[in-house]
Amino acid sequence: MTLSLYAASVPVFKQMLTALGDVLAKAEAHATDKNIQPDALLQARLYPDMFQLVRQVQIAVDFAKGASARLAQVDAPKYEDSETTFADLQALLTKALAFIESIKPEQVDGNEELEIVLRPGTPKEKRLNAQSYLLNYALPQFFFHVTTTYALLRHNGVEVGKRDYMGAY
Image (tube, rainbow, N blue to C red; front, top):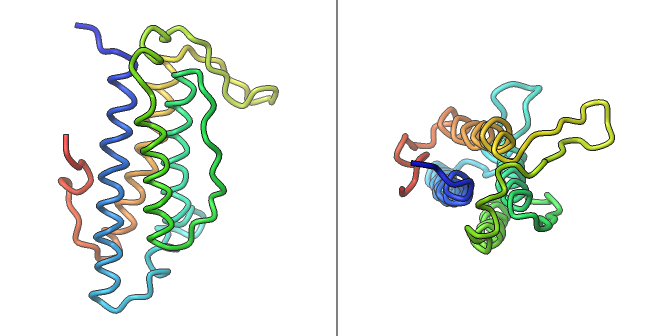
């Protein structure tokens, strides 16, 4: 049985971004219940040289919408990355999910050999076919930032577990 490029991308991004929204809602409720300033969570890092939680969410969104757009050969929406609150992050996820849900299987499937160029025109330029791009680059990057967001919140006492991370599937 062959797994379609669409099935390996868009539904995965939708599942995980939806779960991420739920995890962020739990984090906001935790901050309220424990009388914690929201910025203590939103600006949290596991180590000083890491991006803070807000940036982790923004990058996860960037990979989900960017990969979906590249695979469908459409322009990805550009977001300002100016989020500073839980509400801002929820709005970002809502926008990203709306875009991702607009991508249809027929736009993606059959594009496995489409050439994807990363960092075009730079010394770090890399060319991959769409299947390799998705499986070896975009999905690992996406999951890294989703997982790091989860880990930051768990590390800071938000009661989330694997079910929260996975969401509905």
